[in-house]
Amino acid sequence: MRNGDPCVLVILGASGDLTHRKLIPAMYEMHQAGTLSKFSCILGVSRSKKTDEQWRTELAVWVQKQVKRFDASSWKEFSQRIYYEPGDAAIAEPYQRLGARITQLNSQHSCRGNVLFFMSVAPELYEPIVDQIGSAGLVTEGHRWCSLNQSERSWQRIIVEKPFGNNDASAASLNRSLGRVFDEEAIYRIDHYLGKEVVQSLLAFRFANSIFEPLWNNQYIDHVQITAAEVVGVGQRIAFYDATGAIRDMIQSHLMQVLAFVAMEPPTSFGADHIRSEKIKVIDALQLPDPNRLGDFGALGQYGASSDEKAYTELDGVKPGTTTETFAALRMEFVNWRWAGVPFFIRTGKRMAAKRTQIAIQFKPPAANLFQSVMPGHLSGNRMVIEIAPNEQFSLRFAAKRPGHMSISNVEMMMDYAKAFASEAVEAYGPLMIDAMRGDQCLYKHRLEVEGAWRAIMPFLDERSNGIRKGSQLNYAAGSWGPKAADDLLAREGRAWFNPM
Ligand code: BG6
Image 1 (cartoon, helix red, strand yellow):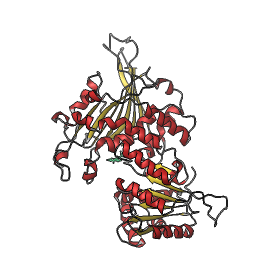
Image 2: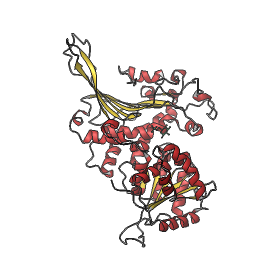
Image 3: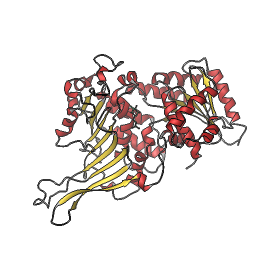
């Protein structure tokens, strides 16, 4: 794999949780792995006043906590490339200093004029900050950087964290603001699920084999379930979460990406343009639910109290009478030739029975049951489970004859990543940020994917969804698999959630 290009990585929102827990540890791991260019450095920007040295000392504590293979001497070497500039990035005031600092670091570390901005601030600051970056003239892509190879063009790019907007209109507005300053090729909408090994390996699984793809359609697949269940509650992010909810937090971004990888057509090549245009196409094919029958398409819920945590609605900071969902199950369908008639059930929730992120593909049962005498009724149909977390596994359930007399049982065939490949997992942000540093947008979202995903879920977010946001049957016990309404969503069609043991 090509290493990242030289660059100054400017982290806007340097004092935030994301920077401490994910971005700096991820960059340190990439430094250890040798994929971060030696000609690169990091400049953190946020409002609190501190020196380079103070920030390095703060970060050391986080990195030691987050990185298993922390090593004092490589940290020392890496931390010498970390700098800090105080300032409120949403207003014009610090930009002259910031611009001068970036220029100085660029020449000190021979970064060839390349700058990668990382937007790690509160989402309402995205647009003002992009405007300031533009007005300050920090984007000069294409200008030649004279101290190095004359033919080398410098670049400026930006990584934008989720949530990307709060609804379809605000996402489109953010896209317009970004587009006024950066070309689409320079905008990297990050989704850390696309950095997960198993999500990426779905592409290899589907398109580097010939035996699965012929079955991957409405002729053989009965339905698909995508689950992202978490044991944790909303934690310290109460205000953010109460204004966001499970659909925006997990489904609009992460699970829509997983859905697109499961359902998209084969791309022409493993290039960003080809992959992203297939994702745009398939997301566009999602059918909007009938607004008068939303209850048949979705179930929302809020978690109840447990011995160690209050019920969601009782947490300090949650609005009285809040209808924000901590659980959501949606039924989606594509209107296209491959998937017409195949429901995709997507669910996510906090305080559920187990941490589990998985895709379950339920195949149709065999056309006829020849084994009625030993197995009355329908044979159950094959099921493939692709587990993304906590384990990384592909498993296929199929029917086999038990030894001895004729009787049928389901057995499992399994591929476990950790066993098949001896590699240690790294923080998903690291390889994704290196991709942005080398100009690879394969694992980043296009403007149209984001807008399409918002369009598909808007009916569940606006006032039309009020009917499914209220009612005590939607509450669910902490430590369970969600509200009864979610079970009913499938039971109505004679289906059931596949809950891992
Ligand atoms: C984040 C959400 O994007 O993803 C969190 O904001 C959620 O609420 C997290 O906990 C889940 O990520 P992962 O990688 O643990 O599945």
